[in-house]
Image 1 (tube, rainbow, N blue to C red):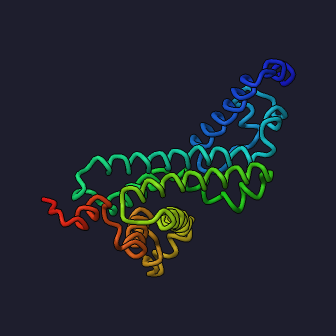
Image 2: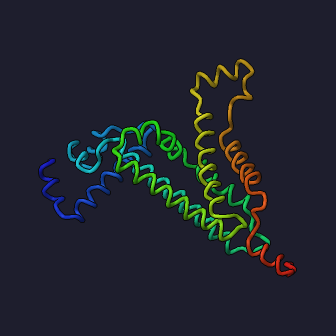
Image 3: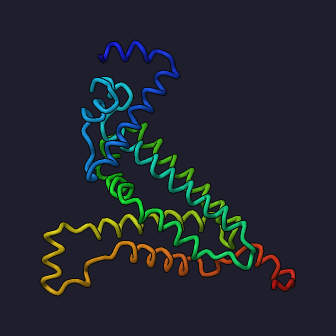
Length: 238
């Protein structure tokens, strides 16, 4: 089977399609599972390929799932840009950066498989990936953070650098809280039995509270740019 598939994937377009098929198979298996990473053999079987063929497109299982993570991250960033676009359609006096922060977090809270994979990013996925893949992933993140930060800076009274820091730190806050909230059932039961409930984190509640509070502290003057412009011109907005 492997030789037959390699013959079929001679053209650039065929190779791109083969790579996309492998990514689709990996993503589907991961979403169907319990959060653990499927093996390379399982992914190859799902994509109707021999295991050796998979390694012609990805240097390791970790590099494959690092790209799966990129797919999830792309979805989050695109969601964030859509939220900013929707906010821009509101009247200046109705625009609310706190609402934007909550919606940023809400997407992550509803996608726990994304969070689990993100929590493996540095310690597992990047450690097991080749240099080119790691640098490519970091450049992707930098470009998407910049796009989102620039969009925020256009809408609100905040500099692009401040918005960039806001996005990076907000993401880190959510990932950190998610990791702390993932207690084994046995540990959680022991904590409940020993009056340690205050150490059990309600992830959704804690993530929203942390990010919204962070935005308010770091960018307390994050008001709509249009409102600030009108105020500076002495205009009254009704």
